Image 1 (cartoon, rainbow, N blue to C red):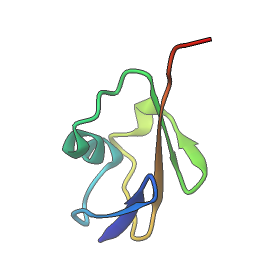
Image 2: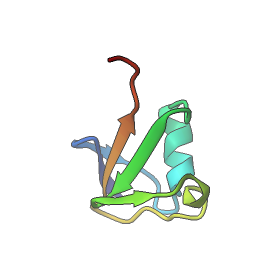
Image 3: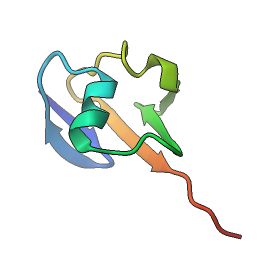
Image 4: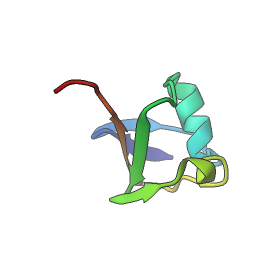
Length: 66
């Protein structure tokens, strides 16, 4: 199935959870937030959240600075 990750199309397996996507992308989970179709998904729900065809995934990394 095809989803968008930060506006870039990406093909994933039909049974992918959000946590599996994070693992596949090799993203450190420290300091990130994830929204799917404009709804923030809590970190504790990543493993159980199943991605669907055409989902729009936005991964936001916090930065330090002033």
